[in-house]
Image (cartoon, rainbow, N blue to C red):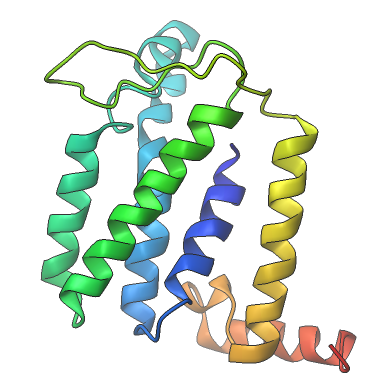
Length: 173
């Protein structure tokens, strides 16, 4: 799945309960961290192919993220649970929708066993497009109802402007 879709899903998850802005950001980051192993692309396609879905797409990373969330959140258990869930939703999305032959090494570094979904769909598939579209609609709904968007992590003023534009564009929704 696309990092944009992972971000949308994680941000939505962070808005299910009343969390602080920081806690929502932590949940959002947890849904994006697995793709840090994609930085290998900077070192070449071979490095990317070897390490993407390996270094940060595993249970150890999920446990680390959940544990770290304790240090930076007020609602520690809830935030850790949502972090763990956002992380695993990322893995699930990649398991089914990253294209053929992209396994997940969930138990790495303890085991080299790779999990591969035999019916995995392409990154540019209609399924991924539909998931992204539904997530976008839900993000617009959250913006309209709760008055915030993912822009809140970069600029509160910018976030308020985006929310206002959404509310003006769809006043009856």
